Image (tube, each protein chain N blue to C red):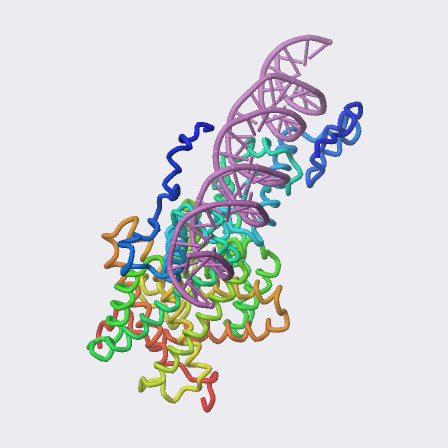
Length: 241
Length: 241
DNA sequence: GGAGTGAGTGAACAACTGTTCACCACAGTA
DNA sequence: TACTGTGGTGAACAGTTGTTCACTCACTCC
């Protein structure tokens, strides 16, 4: 371990051979990568590396050195971008919810086109999870995170997400006379189902993909149950019997 | 740090002053603590210490040295009781679900006595969480644990718990004609609500206890919604209209 | 009484951690 | 052209970690 490469070679200035291969430094003049591009490049590499590691660790067990190693960068570089792991975690929360909003957008478009609203919504969710496994796993796992700031951020954003969903629900004939509070309750139940489905689907994907249709059918059934429940529900706990 | 106490004192043979104060070693003859008692004592201390630490760490960030330190025992002692942290985690899962079964027992008794079944059930849950915060937090947080074996164990036991609940539900007039699969679905939705409530209540307890009644009311409302849904639900996806 | 068992000890190990530091190379500006 | 700001480096730091080891000594059983 104390053998070190002969000093003469000067180590190529990139002894951390990793995801950020030190900008191609193309030709001398035109193809310059401006400073800000370099910066956001390693920043991305750090975020991506962290997300990859979080596949089988939890955030409060994520080491700065691990992350920089995954990003192919020296440990000290981390501090040029984030103050701490918690800080990085908060950025991941933001990004994850950005893709969640993408989900909602897709769902809105798709649901109008589909003949079965339930099937359509679940299908959109499933393909979205397939496309962004990291973000969905992150939210599902860190929802109850041991890292306080991240836990709170996720809860806040989930609530926000639910209220957005509630305003969408308000357009449906069955429930458009409900008071907001009841709509939000229903929306939160649906969001809870969504998160739970994410985590179950991700486990199914990597442990027994043949059971995916079964899971999808089950999710549809639950969602159907939740929405059918609206038929029997008397808003605000039985006003006018 | 390299000052060490004068060798003469022989360190009292208990240099880890902790929760297991080395059995009181009462009088010489009658009050002997048999070997097996000693053993299960430190085992308990390890489990309790671990559970205490898990209040603000996650299992996959729990160190053996931390646990032994919390238990007041030398690091090496850990291996006399558990092969690894994962192993200890599985024992915690078992114990946590033992208290969960206690919850169900209490609920059964209480629900028959209460005039409002919903209010009664939620009340039992709430006092149970107050009495066993560690176990409920553990299940809620490690439900999506990064430690595979623990995650699987919790999922299995939650499913089992839901099927038990389903057989209880089967006695209710509204749903007693439902096929098992539908009952289990409802039970799983209820269990999910339970777990979610645990985690939210625990956060409320230590961050703003004055908001507990609000949370309780909200939980009752959700539970009511879930069960009322049964009125509108046509089992097995609309057989006979 | 004497031997054997086994829970607990403390020291040691190499490996790893977070954080700081002086330094370097270079893009952007003057 | 030379100057400056800054993203990235590698070395160093003091701690902490998991695991193994020979060991002690109270208990149990013969």
